[in-house]
Amino acid sequence: MSKDKKIELLGDLLQEVEVFNPTPKKKEEKLDPVGKFKRSAHLTDQMLKYTYPKDNTLDLFSILRDETKNKIDERNIERSSIVLGLKLTPSETKVIDCLCKLLHTKSQIEDKNSGDYYTGNKVIPKKGDTPLAGLGFTIYEFTKEYIGIDKKVGGKDLSNVAKILQDLSKKEFLIKYREEATTSKGGKTIREIEDYQRIIQLPKVTQTEYNENNIEQSKTEETIVVLHPIFRSQIDSKFILYPNDILQRTILAYGSPNVSDATLRLRDYLFRELSSKRFTPEIGLEKLYYTLADKMMLESRKKLVKNYTDKALETVIKLGLLESFKVGVSKGTGEPKITFKINKDFK
Picture 1 (cartoon, one colour):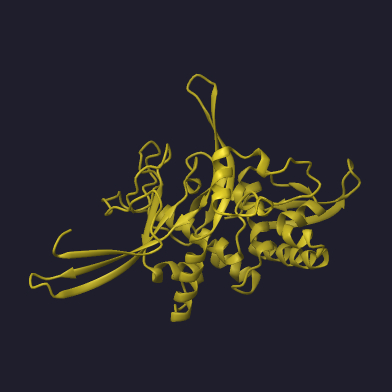
Picture 2: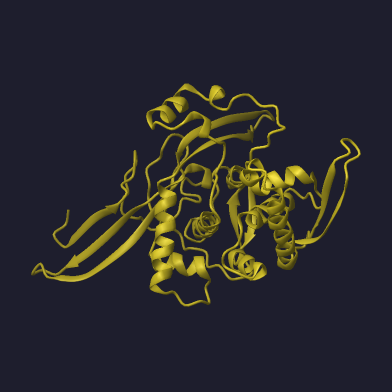
């Protein structure tokens, strides 16, 4: 290591990966409030996973690969507690919003065929077939994004956001999804991904500059986030576009920074439908309740879920994402259903 520089890794160290000094990237795209960023549709799918008791499914643990089972057993985790998908708190969902936006603005996003497409601004070695994305930023920069560009960042904000990031970096999730791609001859390839792992890893880098007399001149601290491959999985072709200021607009529409999980999930569900050009989707009312709040539904707290759902519907209408909705009866089952009318021109 150079005598002029001293680099210390703080916090949780990376597993199976090393952080290198960043190499020059192409000019980062400057985002304006009315622009958009991409989020991998695979990531959104995992965030919207839910448990529905009427689904006739096999025991989840029994259908996992041996490698995944071993990971879970080695960690002494109760098998019955394992659920599929990313079960996030509202604060963690907001962090995902920020990470996806920063991945867009800090990445090379022009050349889809380049190996550094959507890999952030930190060079991370490949893990398997998929390059890992690395993001470098100050906690102030990230907190500013999290609480709102026009708001003043205080010390409490910094510590709160840092804790959310740290807590999320310690959580592991069961992820299962399929990547499909068309071949040049008209066929297709399918990759099945199954993983039980953290979705972010979070070391910190402190860089201290010394002069020729070994006297400290400056010190900077930077947070490094290494993202799970799902953050950029097929992001060139299977993605959902979000407005750059979606987090701030969601908070404004909700009327508080403490946006409920149900509201964030309904927002993301409607964005996924909009991206697929399904402008009038319908879903059974009970299934919608489980989509937005499966844990409370499994605890028989349906009245509370209905209240959260009503507030979520009010919020996405104020957001301008949803024009209207109506509750009716399914001809097939005779059970209540809800039909949405999404604003297809939402920007």
